[in-house]
Amino acid sequence: MGSSFEFAAIVLGWVLVPYAIATLTPTWRWLLGITLVIGGLLCAGWIQHWVVSTAPDYQENLGGAIGIALFAIITLGFFTGVGIRALTLMLASRGLPPHYVFMICVAGVAIVPAVVVAPGAWQAWKTRAPSEACLNAKFDIRVADARLTVPNLPSLIVYLGRTSSRDAYFFHDKPSLRDFCALSEDGRLGIKATNIWVKFEQHTDSKPRVCTDPVADWAKTFCQVGSLKWSREVDMDFPLDIHVFAPDEGIGGSRSTYLDSLRAELQSPEVLFIKADTRTPDRQPLIFECRASGSAYWCRTGYPWVDGATLNYTFRSPRSDIAARGSRIDVEVRRFLSGFRIAP
Image (tube, rainbow, N blue to C red; front, side, top):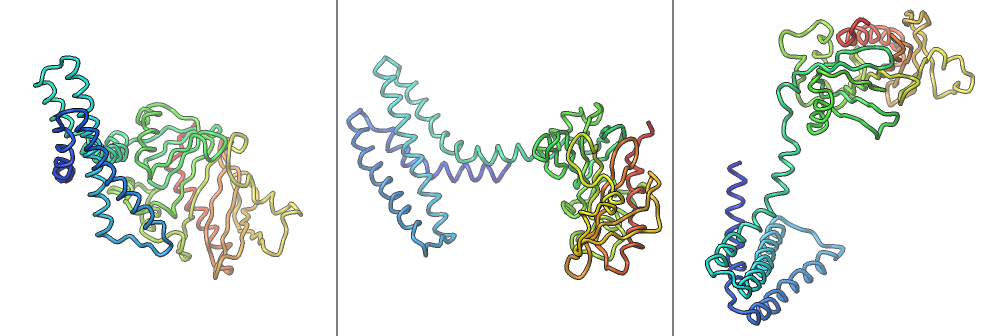
């Protein structure tokens, strides 16, 4: 807040002289003449800057940027003064007492600093931190018939609509998180969602609150590997992301990679279907669909999870370890999601 006031004071200092030149004009003729002369010079300066800045080899340095900012403040100050003086001359001609004219001129000085400072203040207001009740909330979210209690994780994205661009709430984004808290009344109101996406490979700069002591059993592995660079890390037994979605209601991934592996049109040299020595909740083999990605393989799996909800997740692994690592990751995924699920 202090820096905002200091910046406003600097702006005010550069505003006063051009503002005073305009507001101290005694008559309409003086105001018109000052506007034509000084306004013309200011406009010529902006035209010159536009011509120079459009040159292919133009490069703006710090000094130039500061100079342009100050010139913009002077321009705003002068034309604000012109507008205020035109207003006061018109009001004075209709009988407004001189002391009111003076008060309007003094009050008008604040317009330019307000115009300059207001966008930054508005942006700071929009990106303010959510309330403590919102940050500590656990959200009651239903996907298909699966009821989940979801903690506030920065890597979480909740979709309420049928497309990724509609009704999406990003928990790493403060305004979006505040909107979701308002919608759910800080977790007190149940929400029907089509897809929950836990995108671990992004938004790991801040430590999630679930990783503060004491750490719940379901979150221990997540908290241990959370400091790694997920998208580049191969040697970890944890997924890059998790989708829990309603297959008939919205966006999502594969309903079953086991069934995909049986479809002839999906067979190709670029795709490997790897079978693990594990079964999914619907008692089908756990199958990973993998594609080469650099020195490792990018793998995903999908299967019916619980109460009509489908589970998808992705991970990276060396070719020789896909089946074993995938099985270990599957255990970790179900362990992680055990902290979300409420028994129906």
